[in-house]
View 1: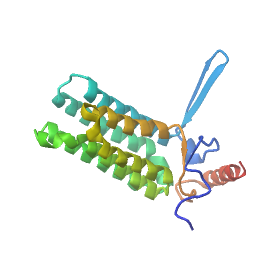
View 2: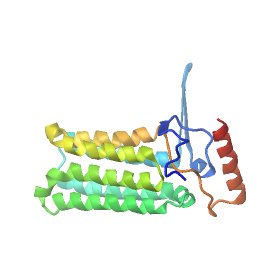
View 3: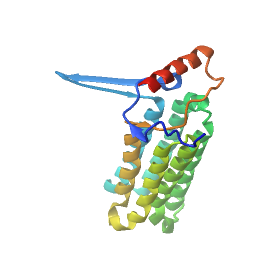
View 4: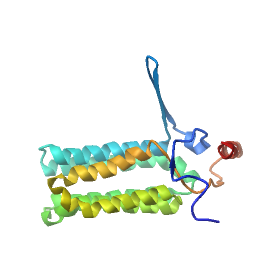
Length: 228
């Protein structure tokens, strides 16, 4: 059996025939202005991408453009990041339980806490000699998280996303004083992009978390996707 699901493209428009675990907590948006209609839907995994995208954009945007003391920023961003970790766990728990990927949540939580510790070591503990590497560290931690996702979910999309983050690290010295905004654009941009597309992953699995009816529903949805 191939490691990657070659029957799925790396990226495509979102599929509408969702499995049961993807429909739990689904967020649907429908806007209409005159004759123009915009419809979007976001699974809980998409919502996590949106959540972290907004958190990342806020953190790196403020760091780049606002004259707020570094100590204040470190304290506020530590709290906000921990809230993001909590929100990620709450949103993803059912989905990762069905897909047997709970370890991914633990891994991402650990990576974010490592990032917090490094940031607070630089600022709150006064180890300013480490601060020039802050952006590189956060890009590296994000890349490692995507590598784990790519391996655990057998997804080429997330492996390529990891590579994109890693490729941005050697470019940081060339951005001068704009390292924070570049880092924010890379991390937040990828997160927001991933929330709007369908990424590839391994075929669905059977797991006792779902009832017999829910598993049958998933089989029906999978047949519809194959026909489509």
